[in-house]
Image (cartoon, rainbow, N blue to C red; front, side, top):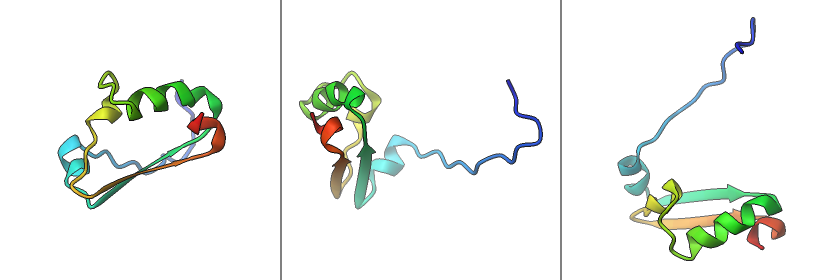
Length: 69
């Protein structure tokens, strides 16, 4: 349902080539319900879009203890 009268939030969409040409890409992950997916992606599973991120520079993960498992 649309929200009448609300101001739209600015949004930027980046493609895989744009992300992968970056010097640094960072993911911020929180909550225990994300731990299984984080583990699968960091273990090399390619079933998730995030697995296609491979910057020319650093890929950094910032997680709370719950998300890190």
